[in-house]
Amino acid sequence: MRGTRWYPIAYMFFVTAGFSSVVIGVAAMTRERVEANARAAFQSAVLAVLPGLYEPGLSGPEVERRFVEQVSEPDARSAGAYTLRKDGQVVAYALPFVGQGFWAPIRGVIGIAADRQTILGITFYEQGETPGLGAEITRPAFRRQFEGRILAREERPIRMRRPGTELDKNEVFAITGAAQTSIRLEAIINQAVRQWQEAL
Image 1 (cartoon, rainbow, N blue to C red):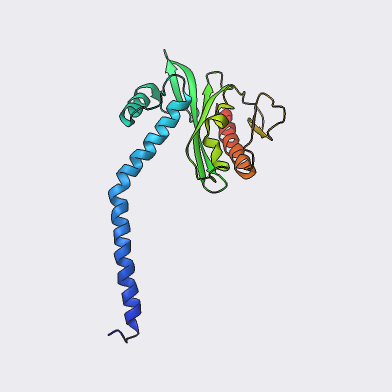
Image 2 (image 1 turned 120 degrees about the vertical axis):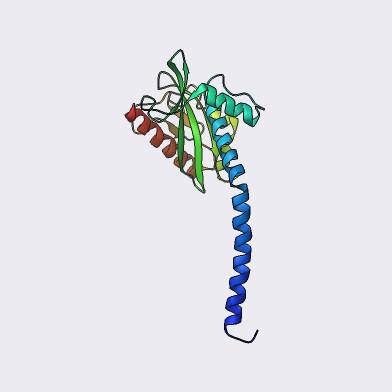
């Protein structure tokens, strides 16, 4: 039997089928958990850029409760952004963005005040950039730069500049040593913001 021509083919088929079945089975068993974790990461990111909603150490159920009870889903008036409202008035917007980074997709949320210009904060809930370089976008020191910046009404609402240069009101410092991540992140944010501004 082992000397026949079809034996290697049949052997590889059954081995591959066996391992594939295991992988598919594990993926199916963990799908709900993976989806729940992704949902919780997104909800935490939205809460983090809206004033007064996020605190370090919040449990998953508490994050979901605050999100469901206090954050309004996107509608025509918010042009695709999530909103925090008080007495029927918009207090802040949470605008999701996604795009291709240098190595992997970058997903995040930018918080914008009711004036539709002032940035309240920015956070990232998925990225695969180089540790110590592009991944520095997730560091508080980088993210804090965006707070209080003013979105311009132009092709590049937010600009990233080389560290050490003088900044304008819509500019922040890029990541040193991570030019490609900085360039791509600027483009991702600006595309989302421009589309939002136009829709509003």
